[in-house]
Image 1 (tube, rainbow, N blue to C red):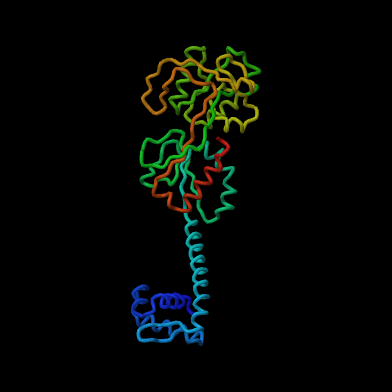
Image 2: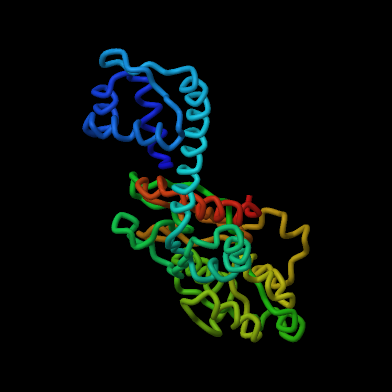
Length: 315
């Protein structure tokens, strides 16, 4: 028996004529007649009494019609499950800051693979915003809110930053000997560096535009640097420090609103500071960004939900 025969049977019951049934399904009326005849021969049951052009169910046909509608429902569920399964296959490209991708996403990747084995997740470590309109990425994670109005933007949480030094550096160097490791990739961070140099007699011991390199420089006891807490926490010997008083910071001090005076700045990019003070421990929002067209994809939504769950501890 062909499963499609059931669809012809149910349709003919509802429409009662070959012509109406054929128009509904989009075939010739002779096709409908042939499929009904095939079904009756296969089941060895007369399903209809012919009254002119109308097809009226026999008693046996009525019993089988009820069962046929239940089977059709099960087939529909089966087809939807197959469609959903296929929709959960394929590649999803996520653009994220390299440090964030390594330290936050990678530890959770094995769980994602176990849950969605047929989704190929491609993580691109990028600082700049991928062109979502040209599908350079399906989803982007960014520390700066995009200015395009047609993108879907969700704040995942906040990333906390603070100044850190190696415990041996704090112990073996006099406070007046402390030096600064400069991170060049952010105008905001450069502003802090300039203030420490100008108002608190700091010199630069090392400069880089790579956050990983800055962290490793701190681990090598080259000086103090501004680092995200999720990165510094991977190194137990790094201590949060107050670059003004030049001492390591206690938990109580970390929770206080410590500020550092900043000079007037004329920064014209998105990192520009609108205030003349900035907390020694500062938090910045992390955004999940996607184009409206891709959110209709089940696999993209699955990846987005995973990213939201993975970063839930930020809130």
